[in-house]
Image 1 (cartoon, rainbow, N blue to C red):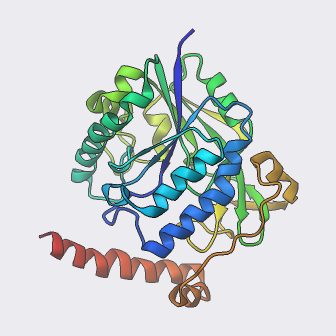
Image 2 (image 1 turned 180 degrees about the vertical axis):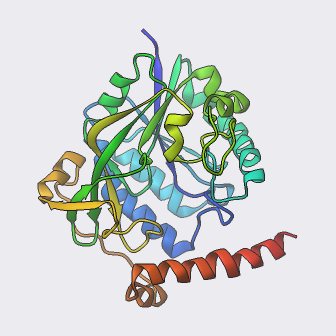
Length: 313
């Protein structure tokens, strides 16, 4: 029987040109969201044979909030490991020419940090676990069962969406492949950056990406690997004031369901989320979502992008 190492991988910061870090208030709020909603969903997994792998950047290595999270997870009985070399999947938010190079560098440095934790196993399973979303209680057991055969990857087709501020829950029906998937690697492939990238690369060209590009985004998993979608509502998307791309009245949102659905995700006793929000975000929140997106684009992708490019050069 093959020995496996199953990681639930949380890319906490490290995404994009600004490393996905939006200030200390944002960081503290996101950690609190993670503690309040995501950790309970991990604790109720019927199969506890997994390790929570959380990746940060070098900047967070001596951050008191990260040290407190480490202690919190230990107290909750969650087996975990932290790395500080950036995200370990293709970053589609940076220029194409840089993305693969950065991924290779991040993998090289991260595998050095992970090597002892991986240990003597035959296969590694890597489940994408967003820092504010949840899997249903049977996910670990189901994923490991599905990947015992020839499949190279599995993911869930649909799920639920929850407003953490009000605890309202609705169906979430995707028209793309959602970012709740797991890839199975032979250990030797997983730990070798070049083989890791080749194994997960596109086997055909897709819009915007050539053959050979390491999995550029969750939409293209089926174009990289022998992939199966599990026809089940296996995940819960969490929405709150710290979201960038997902909000409760999302186009994928379906009918509202009873809160008891949350019990399947470990959220039976969760209270509504309370966050410290800046005056700027309060004002922004009064605008329509389309207007908010335009303002974020202008300030982040246009103004700050130019400043960032100037400072780098």
